[in-house]
Image (tube, rainbow, N blue to C red; front, side, top):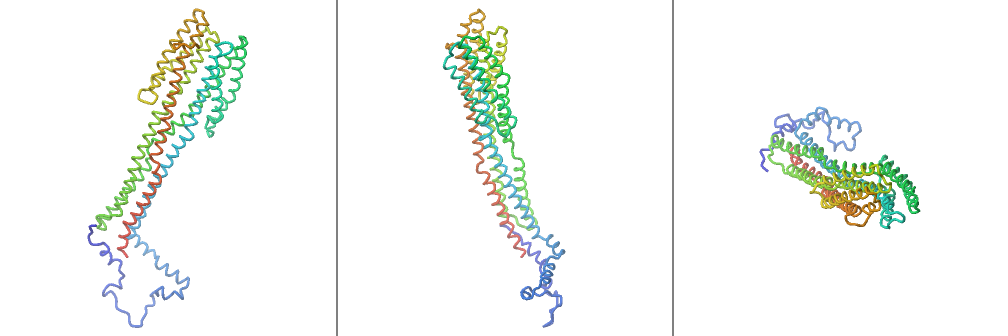
Length: 479
């Protein structure tokens, strides 16, 4: 440490009592005693009364003395020390609280928000699959193929399971209403399908009417409710991830303020007290810089992982889920046309709209994100399905209902069933891939800052300790 002559030597004359100055007063006669002198405390220990103690306290807390002390250098040093300690501790506490809240947000996404969203998406898909499978089974006439019947039963079972385990956030009243609507209509839908199936087995044409009513219930009530529920739950995941990527500006501002204050105090010490370097304050400054860098780097890495979870997981997942549901609805439109022997073109219009939207979703998906290879497979199947559907319509236009049915539900590789199943399988695998990406990146975002909460508090208190270490030697000079 390089130091000029201590300021205490300069101020010593200001603080030394006048009686200690040479020639400042005449010695008192031997045996004489000033009537105004206050006896020492040791002499009064046996006879000190409350009034005498109060008088001594008032004498030492005289307002003039307090004002003089507040303008003194020790008071300024104490004030600066208090400010620095408070700023360091506050900056560390706010940083720790900010990181803790952000981690809680990510943990909530992993444990609650994202599972609710995934459950609502599975519910939506299961209902669409059930509707498509029911109409496909109906075309077969009599006893439907076991595979198709199993697909319907599995879809209904999965939909009921998702409603039972919780496809809606219990704290979201609107989501609970939507789930309740679906739950109340699901038995009605299943009953209509069973009635249609029984009549179809017995060769009663009324079975087609029951199936049409069931499909109308699904398309106008249950699927819209499931779509709204899925959209609400997915939006909650997106909102949480976007909020997380916003930098904690207040925390950074406090850290910068603490660093500025530390630098300012060192400048004052150098100018007023002639101390060029203060090791304690330098160490405290280095600690706060380390905390700032840790916050900036760790926060950036964590935000990057959360942003990747959003861009490569959440948003692509929503697109693929939408694509799978559109495919199921198109399949239902295609098979219902045959079930209802539709000649008005109503189901063709619905099929064309669903397939056009599906094509747009798959085309706009992007080639540099997870699931893009699956989407490429789905696009090829989409093209093949359109060609098969055209063959079905051309065959039906000639009056060959049986031939059209074979194209729609037959086992051929170029028929609608094979192309639809290839598309659905590709999209379903893409959903699995993007969900894995979503969850792994959210987990990584939380892990990156896992040690920052206790670390920020520890560094803040260590910095405050070194502030005291740096200022206490200056205060000792005024004893």
